[in-house]
Image (cartoon, rainbow, N blue to C red):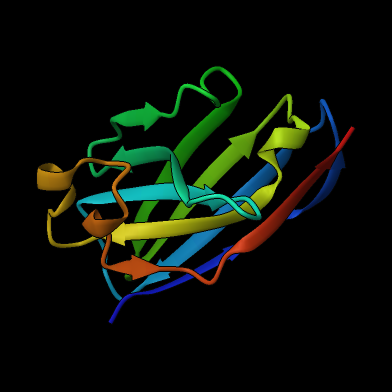
Length: 129
């Protein structure tokens, strides 16, 4: 059983930075990991993804500002990060990490929620103007 736990959210002024972390226990090498976010009244959207080889993809809205990275598992503990810079008020959302352990994203795409088997509980990011 894979368990995902996010941390690092908070409140920051526009132009500031935050680093989100996600610890994943129970699975050493997921096929694909991703960060999603959901703002109030909006659908959840993919932000960034990274595969086991370190290849990354980003949503257009965060390119050049966000960086996804990973620390491959030691003792079955895997870490995922999202470095967020030049934050904007429109980045305000609940941020979730997600794990694809069944290669579903190869069929449905990296930013399709159906591709992910496991989800964290989320961490809130609030950016004020």
